Image (cartoon, rainbow, N blue to C red):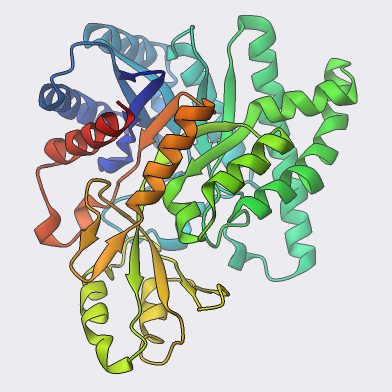
Length: 402
């Protein structure tokens, strides 16, 4: 929905289902309920998650026509896809497999191109549209510098196939489409520093000759086209887990000419670690309900001198709780936006408020997407009905923008 100068939506990766039928059934069930909870009369935005399996069905002309008809009848529009999870994302162990297949593979490339073909057919023609994607791969899969070099070269080659396709769509249909890379803890691109390095050391040098040869543009134009069609999915939770200063990060992105494709509005868990070991039991007790087997919940601890220490998952961190000298933990767990505290725990809600303020001042992107997808694995005392939960998130953001 339109809120001030922004398009606000929620990501449908919250709904289980890998087939297009299951995905479409969820839209039909939940979108009218959520609109009702929000008392929305104007056009309602949907951030659509389409799996690889579903994309192969949806791309068929009759299915696309059916979706377009439903969107029109229900006064809805789609400007963003979540193309990060390729396969199953609910009710099974996902963990690091959320990165599979990674950007070194043809499968990831074909899936993403398929999503763009679908998005081009249904997007509003008066605005840009984007697809968020994996930060290339999971860094622990690549053990040597040779392995990493091969991954980066293959990934850049595949991403440039997407850039070529998007630029051709711009030339042929005047559509503004972008691939939005989503840095994540323990991804190959996990923070702002890694993202800038990816652009400057890999994508730009390897990508410029591709566009110069195919389209006959100058090197300067080629670089600008790459930055136009490859942007950032700025997941606030991920940057907050890494203790990043949002204003400083957005400053350097602007200086480097790196654009924001969308802000994913999500909150991480935050725990203050008492100095006295005897006082840490309440923190451990508060964190234990968040230990679950579906998703990775990376933890980054901060020492008093601001040195950071990363743990691959929450259970690994809890093993060190009694002995660590860290004074704060931040946990990659997408908790509800509208709650600032959870007993002995807190959220990084203030990071979302900071990003909303900065984007309001700078107009970095009009795309805002709430991405709280962990409702099924949250402790019971946080649960509401799904449509009420989503509506409450959207209302919270709407109220803070207004």
